[in-house]
Image (cartoon, rainbow, N blue to C red; front, top):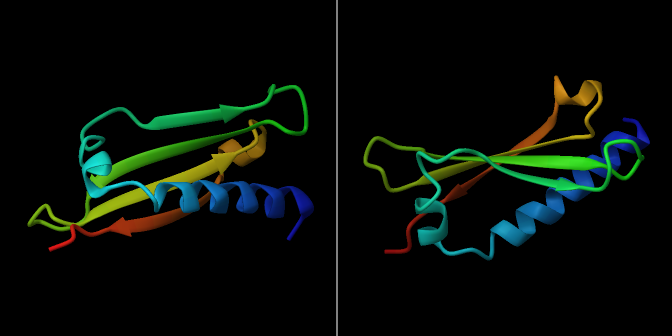
Length: 92
C-alpha cells in the first residue's frame, strides 16, 4: 500500500470517528438528500482531499441507517476512491 492511500485512509478514519458521535436523528435527516461533500485544501497541492458521505436506510423496516463514506485526492483515486461504511442503529 502506498503512502498516499495510507494518508487517505487515516483521514477517512478520522471522519468516521467524528460521525460516530452524531445522533441517529442527524443521519435520519440526511436520507433522500444530496451527498455531503467535505473538501480540504487546494486541489493543486498534496494535502487536498474530499470526502463524500451518502446516507440510506439499510433495512426494509427503515430503522438501521447505512452511512457510506469515500475519499479521494482529486486524481485517479476519484475513479477508485478509498471507502468504508458505518451502520447506525436506533437506540431502543
